[in-house]
Length: 388
Image (cartoon, rainbow, N blue to C red; front, side, top):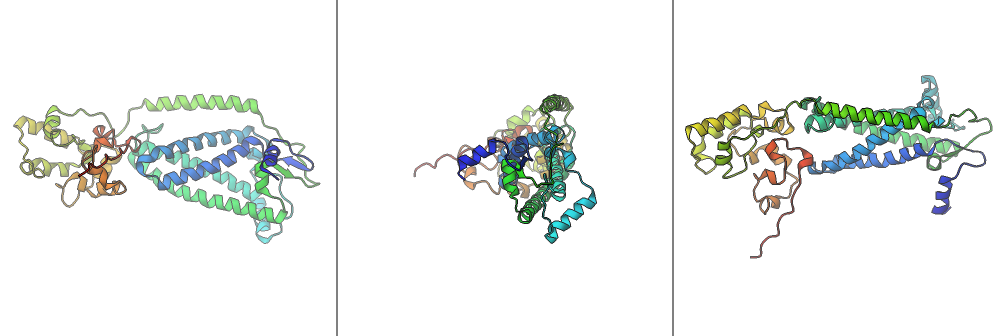
């Protein structure tokens, strides 16, 4: 059969002793979510931090499809509804035993009881991944609809669960495929083909006369209501004051004195215990002598110590809060800084427009705010080296 004939078969109705078990919206969801989940796993595992936007974009599409499937499970076709997925534990165990022992000869019209349970678990795990992803984004980046209600610690916990659920999803997906292959080999029916065409052969004693059809009217009504409800809830939550971060005004003395040599480092990047030795040793400040008047010294010290890392709940503040054996070392020699920048091309720090390991605002466009969000990272292309 050519690809054109297969395409025509996809759009035509089932013939002979076949029944359209899975409607087109369900099939669209099945194959779309499969591809998007693979992309989400790849971008989540292998993309560097400054390319997090790709993972977020894929996650947003997964969320939209998941919400559609939740709706379609109530108003879709007979074999797409969740009521068709629910079976008694004894029925599921009997089906699993029949598959294991090779005694299954008659295929179910829809999913067999065991695979129906696995499919429901996959949807639940997918929902958990969406929720933990939003909680991670809200807690660690202070962005998204949960930014105002999730703390940094909760965001870290959500990130751990996000990883655990990812592996659980992979395990369930593999089990889903194994069950399909096992049932196909026992019943001589290609379930993979059925999921593409939607058509499945019926035995003489099987009937779908009482099968419910999809209710598109209710789907439209409920979908519109859900969209407006989610939009209203998101806007309401965004108005709640954010915990752990706030705008900060830099004193003029700090900008003029410290900004002469380097960017005005946000105070949240070092704990109070690390700021103190730097302030007490300004005469030998990394090879430079810094002279301050009494008023300037008090202003700068008060600003840095009052707003040190302990006073913030951002990802950067929590990472750099740990005091190193040498509290007076350079910020760029901090183990956390070196770990976070380990995948960055070293030539980026020696060529324009960066030219320095401490020139953070060139790559971190929100560095002055102290947020250091991953989506605000934009690495410039190093300038070509000048000819000798």
